[in-house]
Image (cartoon, rainbow, N blue to C red; front, side):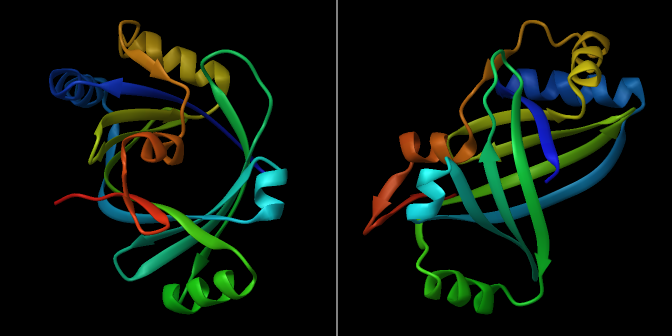
Length: 180
């Protein structure tokens, strides 16, 4: 199973503008912007494995992702991750619930994405704040931090589902973080 290696940072509006300017100045390639709806499912086997099942909807397409947090220390997180594109998101939602998984969290996100050297950098706006993630090898993440002068940014260890659980609003059995 592939391993996702990333570091997340909380940003102020001003810091986000500075990061974007630094990416432009460094010659990072802007890939584009998307709006997402992420549905996190729970079930006994997922809880036992410290894993999540996510259905991410982006326009007419969707991705089904299984993630399992790996033990580690420090500010860079590692997760085993399997992901596949889904042709029919509504059918996949039915399949997942028929298998006994229930939606527990839903969060919306506006994501801007860049490619820089051997890393992917995203700036995410969620209803509860701005965040940046750098994904790549541990060495390439550290190099990118130095090249973009990111040493004064606050790193965040929590995942978006954990942040949604903290900042979202309960709607029946589901906690949601949606834009108004």
